[in-house]
Amino acid sequence: PRSLSTFVCPSLESLRKIGNHIDVSCALEYLHHGYSETILHCDLKSCNVLLDESMTAYVGDFGIARLIVGHKSSTLTTTLGTMGYIAPGTIS
Image (tube, rainbow, N blue to C red; front, side, top):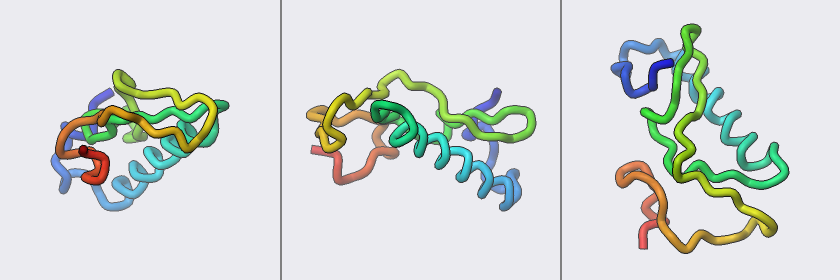
C-alpha cells in the first residue's frame, strides 16, 4: 500500500477523493463507536492514510493511538498528534 501523501492532489479524480473521505470517515466511526471501547487515533494525516491497488483508503499508524476506557467524556491531559494536523483548540 502507498500513503495518500504520495499522490499529488490533482492526480486523484474528485469522485475518488470523495470515496477516500468516506473510507476514512467509516474507519473513524468504527474506532469511535463500533468497538466496545473508544479508540482515538491522535495522528490522522495524509501519510497515515494508506491506499490499496483499487484506491480504497485505510487508516494506519496507530503508534500514538489511545484507548478510552469507561467514561466516553474522558479528557486527555497530554496533547498528542503532529503539529499542523491537530485541532488548534487542543494545544495548551
